[in-house]
Each structure stands twice: as structure tokens, then as C-alpha cells.
Length: 209
Image (cartoon, rainbow, N blue to C red):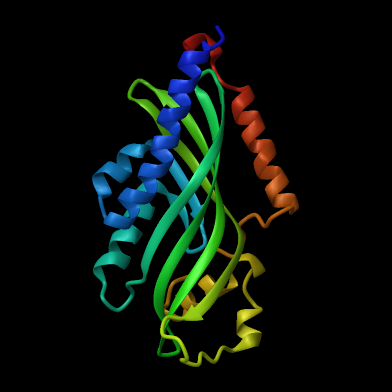
């Protein structure tokens, strides 16, 4: 049975709220509400992490609570495009990740432009995120204080994926292992991700909605 226009609009608003809530809860350290956004077997792939939702939350808590490895970051979402088929949905949300951390002793701001590609499942408890993949378009770095000089090892910088090389350069200095295999914009890996999303949508159970 096809969704009515009204029900589809409600479902899209709920999914968009889940996407926005993910950023708020992650940045504020609201771990229990963050966990509620995911399915039990939820997974996530971003610059510094690839694994289950539970593992991601544990790693995020460790970063937040360890004063020697504590980057300050914010996730800002600019809106999303959502497709629904029965109990399956896909959301693509453009946003920014803002990070403040030291690089070679200079406090820096890193701005990253990203698209979060999310697989959602409608469960008995409502819409839940089953999989999140970050597709990073570009990033940039600048000293926080105007006039400070930042010297970067260009060869080392260029050893990281171009779309998130500044994030990778700085976080790896803190001993954080980077995920080097995220889909790049317009790459075969991104096309494969979109194909996976299309297959997820096609497999939605329309009789349950």
C-alpha cells in the first residue's frame, strides 16, 4: 500500500529530525539519546571511525573524556533529501563539520563540507538509522588567531584522501587512526553507495506502511 501524501510528509519530518538530533546529541555528549537513533545493528563510517553504533559511541566518549585527545567539534546540517519506500528510507543531508584543535602547537579551526548518506528502517519504535556513511567534499584549515603561522608537512598532508586531508592530518597527530577509504565525490565508491541505497529502497516492505 502506498503512503498517503500526509503520512509521507510526517515520515520525512521524523527522519529529518533524527538526522538533526544525531548532530545535537553527538556534540553534546548525550549518549543514550544518540544510541536510540540507531537500530540495534546500526553502523557508521566517517573520517576517524568505521564500525558499529555502539563502538562509535564508546570511541566518541573516550575522545570527549580524554583531555589529551579532545577535539572540539560541531555538526551543522543544512537540510536533507529523503526517499521512502515502505519501511525503508534513504536520506542525504549536506552539512559542515567544524573542528577546533591544536596542529603543531597552533590552535586551528578546520571546516569540512560533508554529505551524510543514511539508511533508515521503520521499526516498531519508529524510524531508526541503520547505516551512516560520510561523503566528504572538501575541508580547509586556518589558525584560530589571526596572524599565527602554521607550518604543515605537505608530503604528509598529501598522503591523506584529498577531501578530508586536513582533518586526517590533525587527528592522526593525536594518535587517532583514520579511515582512508570513504567514498570520494563522483568516485566509483560513491556510485556503489548510491546503488546500495537504491537497492535498500527497492527492498522496502510496502505492505507494512
